[in-house]
Length: 274
Image (cartoon, rainbow, N blue to C red; front, side, top):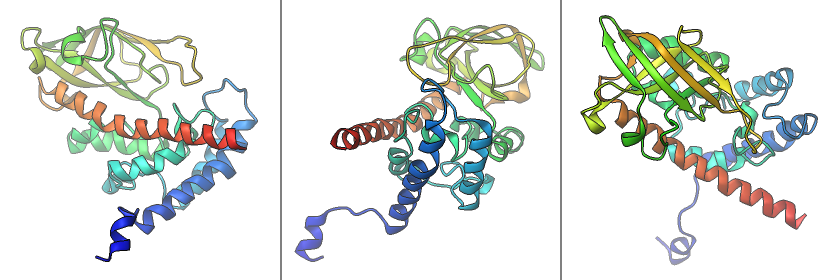
């Protein structure tokens, strides 16, 4: 390697640079104009504008780029998504709704740990139709320590589990077609006592109530589970394996979210210079 090549350090692959530039163009030429025509506090762009832009994204092969390729996504890894998310969030609602969702609405990443039947039934439909989903981890008892804070209970009853408890700050729970809820199946097992469950919209005993917060974003929800019966077939992974799935979910989402915050700073600097 020549001395000047070493001085340049790591360089992004040209393919990723091209993709990043395409994301930037869509944000500036499509998303920002659509966003400018809605209320400043709106968390979404109108549905007709959404699909007008989303169909262009689909035609360009840029749909759900962080989801597995074999199920209809782009198959990109965490690093590539960090590069793209830094650009994708550079608009008003971008920190909490990157690209206004026009690049696809990815399901909670833990669904990819499910069975093939679960993936086909839930994840693939979400990728195809851009439906809302949710994941419910945080409880009034705390959110930064799921191992100790999760008090929601799930008790096995034959071919079902019965869930009782409360979740909070759960985005899209009132409009999601399905979501993933983490509950404690064994209160004596510590980290090994948490299990993940898929809950479908309209399940008896599941209620979600959105509440207003200061920031402009999709309204979070308080979720109540009252004798909510979930078939064993909707358990995600083994009983007691929920915490590792939970941590994988949080870790996998934190890196791109950090990139979004950097992107907001980049956009703020650009606006200040202008």
